Amino acid sequence: MKKVRRKIGKYDVGRTIGEGTFAKVKFAKHTETGESVAIKVMAKTTILNHRMVEQIKREISIMKIVRHPNIVRLHEVLASQSKIYIILEFVMGGELYDKIVQLGKLSENESRRYFQQLIDAVAHCHKKGVYHRDLKPENLLLDAYGNLKVSDFGLSAFTKQGDDLLHTTCGTPNYVAPEVLSNHGYDGAAADVWSCGVILYVLMAGYLPFEEADLPTLFRRISAAEFVCPFWFSAGAKTLIHKILDPNPKTRVKIEEMRKDLWFRKNYSPVKLREDEQVNLDDVQAVFDDIEDQYVSERSEITGGGPLVMNAFEMITLSQGLNLSPLFDRHQVGGHRRTSDFKLGLSLSNDYVKRQTRFVSRKPAKVIISSIEAVAESTGLKVHSRNYKMRIEKVSVNKVGQFAVVLEVFEVAPSLFMVDVRKAAGDTLEYHKFYKNLCAKLESIIWRPAETTPESVLLRQMTF
Image (cartoon, rainbow, N blue to C red):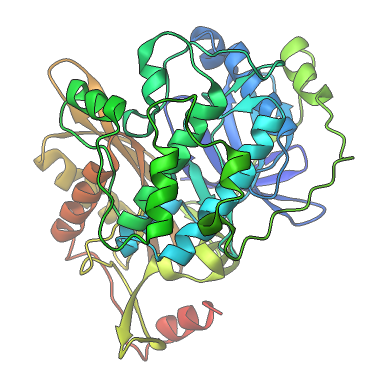
């Protein structure tokens, strides 16, 4: 089996770090500067077949227009003869959603800091005539320093006049504003503010203000703003949340009013922007207007056999906060974390599973693949395998792919393999259950070294 390393323009392309219905996201490094980036890869045939040209062009253009420290930056757009490559800032801290799942809820001070950064980013978007329309914790990323970054502008709208009403009903049901459901047109700025209010509630409570099993009941509660703040919310937080989650968009608090609120202003340091920064959309025009002639060099470098090799630097770079915590159990002793408490393996004790998770095995790569296939098939899941990568899907009577997981095997040391698992489609909680069940049934192939082995010592050193 051959290992393939790809180069796209001036970028060395590494492993897949995300996968969706219409695109994959690859980790890459700029060959001249060494800067880490994320490359969103989309097939031109897919874009054309699904009539997504205008949507993708709009999303790319918007991301270049709304440059802000709290928004994921789009560097440039490239194209080959068959694909479009969107070069994005690499944000290594994961999703804010995962942090909420891990901790249950955040402190009021930390919630306020993230909320302030969110409001700064959203205000900047609105100033540029851009309305996100799908704000939720899953679309808020964290960088290595814990700063918030708004991402995923796939449902965003752009208007040249601030008083234009929007008419498309879109967004995630639990976070959507009541007027969006009315089909009478809505103000994009007010709708985004509502979603920000739901996010603030979730950060501080650890659960949604509006959550029902059926959509009609959920929409009724949203339209009536039927929610109760937990007892641990401060009076200031409760007051602001009630002003935001006002079902009447005309009386709902606006961002400029929110920034004057005493609770909001505590420890608030607004971001200073360079107003003179010029945005160039020429590369976007080139990709979509002259799609057949404008392309970059795309080539593959073939090396030895077996799974892709991931070196220590790649492991560190792709782990959150420049440590290998996603690869290790991290046990607390007396409220403090210690270096000796890192253990290779799976964190199953705290019911926390990230959307992208990993475990390590000393079994041969082919044994790992066959073991995972056997477990998946024994639970009625459909498996598609190719080389050292597989896609596992739930099969139903009507359709395939309601839930899907992608697994890939990497060699991290001689006879030491890391299995990278990530959700490709479906519900995140369902993925959590799948991953725990998978790990329980693969216990015999998961490797947990003794604390004194050379490998564990080396890996611990790499966490700093």
